[in-house]
Length: 316
Image (tube, rainbow, N blue to C red; front, side, top):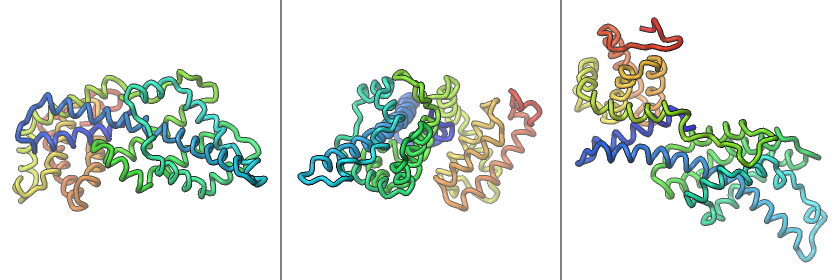
């Protein structure tokens, strides 16, 4: 499922676009928000089938070597652990993956050079070479090699970053989070899983979908209150002098502090400060931290923060 942090980022991006737009249409912006989240889920499936494409490319190279006019002993007797990978066999037959791919018309057919590039990098990897040399592989080893490929080869690949940026503007900041989803997916697979094995859902539960909608809408509704608090607590700073992105980040944090009774204040502050590291400057992080801390203390004193739920009673 899409993580809460990525959901917060999606709300931040759409809220920024909403305020920058000449025509502020709430319903259209909300549709854009959920469309953007849906595109993240599309990327999840897109990268899952990348595994299959890499294995297919490896198999095609083995067949080419076998069909040489004068094949070597190694050509005739290749290591096949990779192309016989049991996890990939499950992924290849997974009905949910197939259905999503068919319905959304996504695939790697237009990017053969990228598939080749990734496989060449995989070939150079010491863990891959050791994996190939195993006399026999167990299921754990079959999963482990693809977790490593995902995190150590696919994630940092600059060509992939460029490719994704060209294919969809919605994927620019998603890769780290989607790779995390894929690693979780690999961990969840078991040897006994059949074709109907469920992949990760778009949302953890209906509460996450409601969270997205409410955070976006309430941030707009509470804007005047948030701006007043920011201006009051940002000592010696006029709102016009504060970076617009910093204002929106604080606006969302304030909204979450007030409106979401089951989310601990510490979680809210930590999450938005982490997001600040990627969307603002290094100085912004300490500035936002200081302002939000003052605002939170005021909201607590005014009894506008009320937390309920397991472990939260007595937090404020």
